[in-house]
Length: 525
Image (cartoon, rainbow, N blue to C red):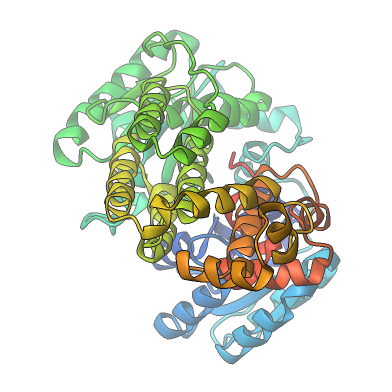
């Protein structure tokens, strides 16, 4: 049937996106899910390419959230309607988006098929040129929808005769183009359809007997499922080599991947997720000059790196043995980068966590930290958006250079042995109910004198410094995602959970729950 309402889904959680896609049979309701994105930045790029009528978006997302996305859409594409997904605690955000022109909103905890469909239809009726095509046709799922469900990991019950008719050959293989490195470059506006056309033209010319379908996959990826005779596997690999060689000269940023062969359509979801995406991710660590990755032709993997000894690194930093500490860090990162099977998400998270910890550690030792402390968020963002390990390594070296400059211009407190002892004591006992009176007793100071002494020899007062240490440790625990926020507040020395939340937001700009979501989140598939 023909479609009339085009919908784009935006949410940083892949399970949420899949849940919406497969909540009901959109085709029969005259709605087509034309794409999905994991943040507002990706969504804006897809809006230009896919021209949806409606965008359904989450509020809190990394890189660009739903509020900023809504303003951008309404400014650049006023004809597009926006529906907001939100939780109970995000009402203030939802209210602000309505001022930007949001059509409607729905609460995630109450997300139900009938309610969501009614909101989509109600929103569609606001678009003068759009009329939903309702259908009672339930004769069966289209091949497009079957592939969409399989690629998302769902089981599909389809008449075998339909499968045999659509896929007459006994072998399957995925062939794809990775366009992530085009983002931000002058050539980024080349539509996915251009890459798809190049693939299909080559298949038509070299393997006219093969059957192929374009799959709905990740943003900035074009993937084709090729149904072929198993004896033609080498011919398909040859086509991939031809495409990689030709396009490597014209647009070297495009990467090409050919996955593992399989014999049953039901294996598509597992093959895509566990094999194709896995080897495609290796491109992050492989030489930039390697334009083609072929399953079964990868170099032998090197031995995995041992876990980083963060405790020893912290000790070196606290002893002001910075050169040794940074050398230890860079050696470990070089080993990680040389192992192409290193998980990209974990690698980026490690760099982000190390940068965060360095700013916390230096904040306890140095006085001139404001510029570096503010810069860390730009480093988090740039590392998260890096498309090759060389970019991430360059950012780490740049951060270490900035940190070294701060160390070289250290403040007076670093050379004062009494102050060093005081700061060290606070760092060791932050989880206890510390007060100036307790510390004064321990060091045999007059409490009033200690307060004046602390302020005159340190950039922060006692309470401000103690809060910074506690919040820094709380951030580390939030990143580990091993305890609840209420438990963490007690673990770092706060008896009042609401006060902990207030202090944490004041120092980081985020509530503990939003910090955990933004800086840990859930691992991307």
